[in-house]
Length: 409
Image 1 (cartoon, rainbow, N blue to C red):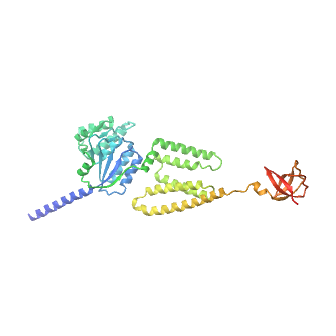
Image 2 (tube, rainbow, N blue to C red; image 1 turned 180 degrees about the horizontal axis):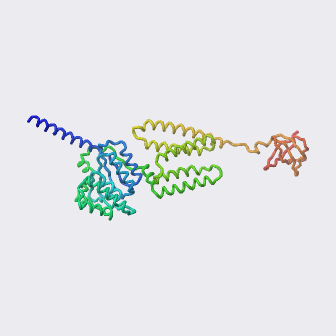
Image 3 (cartoon, rainbow, N blue to C red; image 1 turned 45 degrees about the horizontal axis):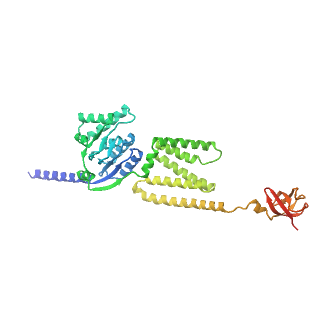
């Protein structure tokens, strides 16, 4: 009897600890706003938001999007499932989860919708049977984690994907797919969330990535970059067209997912260093070197941005020190170049006026002769009267390549 009581106490303590652990695993939440087109920019946001989180943290997606690209949605789903044990989708009043956004929402462990919100419209474009079958199968596996796959659920999947039908919160809650909540605070209460660890919204980097990975923009970058390289090849001498051409070409290929991000970063850094070296070896006005510094700063910034937070401090100081030294050096070179340009260079007229030479031939006022001045022969006219050959003369005026002289006693 006593042994049975001990076993019961142990089981009770174990149950309590399990409940506590369960509550602790969902007590903190990382919020990610899915409020734009589902593309590579949003993939980057989700990866950055989840790269250093504890797997026990809950991830809550605040969704309000018309959808986007299937491959980007798959990458977001795979990232969330790899890095977070528990994901919640929240669709607020007046918000929508359509197409790829609905696909992401259905992948979450729990879905909460407020009155007036909508989910659905997962009809792929182009409408190909193999893609349709893939989406249906994956949604079926998502829903199997939440409810039994009944006949009604199968009909729901078909209508969702093949017809692009959208559903209200009441329709989906009757199917057991979503739960109702009037506010995000109610979601926190139902999920035992007591603390928001961090909130992540799309910013400038995500906007740039979204633009670069747009198929039209990427194609134009490849086209223009290729044309600039061709122009550089066909033009005599180095004109600099190849530099932006290569950058645009590789950036466009990256946008088309044909070149990895590390290659783009390496190319930017190499071009930056090459331009700086070119400026040092062939001093000019500093514009090429300044372009190199700018590319170097962009490359280091991208590298720092992709560096994990725990390793960012040391590399940040090193990078900033490098940038300051290189930028200071290039600014010094530019300053010296500008000062040289501003210095007034003496003209031929300034150099030859008042110089003393001698007449190699007779020189008349109307008939030119030859004088030797500053180690050169010059066509000269007499300013007044005849000047005999061998006489010392002084230059008093210059017009083009003709000089006017007078005798010197």
